[in-house]
Length: 325
Image: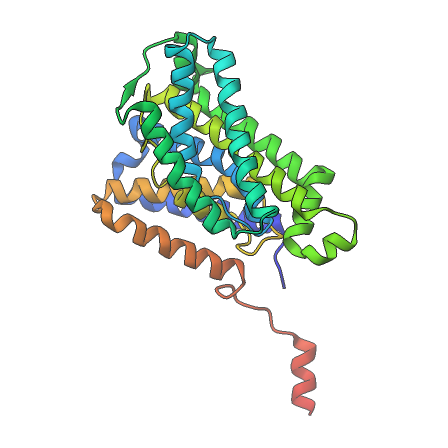
């Protein structure tokens, strides 16, 4: 029997509480202000990217270009502002539009030319990294102005970091789009059964195009926020983040074959990923071992989501019938 999404999110919340308690016991540094600031930033960055990346995933695809596109977005917004003197608001808007267009291009190849999403987005990951190297001349560039742009990542409102509000807005909008609109229902339908979706009048190709476009736009937003916070941009600034985002989606209950997912669940998954990575750092686990742990978490989450690690209720009536036979 499949669990309702709300139950999945409640279960995730309980697991997070247990994990938080365990990390607090293992390392008293976990609850320090400086450490929690790092955790919060990780959650915000992964959460922003996941709010868009969930759409291709639900349609049965995947977007592996997140890290390269996020890094390129940071480089582009810096170039627009500090090389060409474009107003920072317009620079951000241009960067997000470019991210959306790149996502749309990926979606076109996946939906119209029918190239597997894994191949398309892996190629995009490579060529976007190359573009980032060319645009930045392979250097790490510092962003010292304008001050309003830097405040996006470093400022606070009601004593909470600005990235939290950006992430929450992205998550709320994405969850609303997915659960309360016709587009969201079509995304679910295409991922669950493409043939049935076609018979009901849905155009799967258009849905996939828009899904990758949303992923590209959200990734660009994440890249802009990353650049604002760190005040530096370079081609490998977000290297490996796609694995963290995909892990958050899987932990949050997004099906790897499509048709099921929750943005709120993905956010809780992002919190868990941030906790795990932070815990490994606090325990001084060498970096080469981190992917091993992350990969193991993905497998466990998949098994749990499919019900293999959850005790199944016995059908009492069926048991009586078998006994009678």
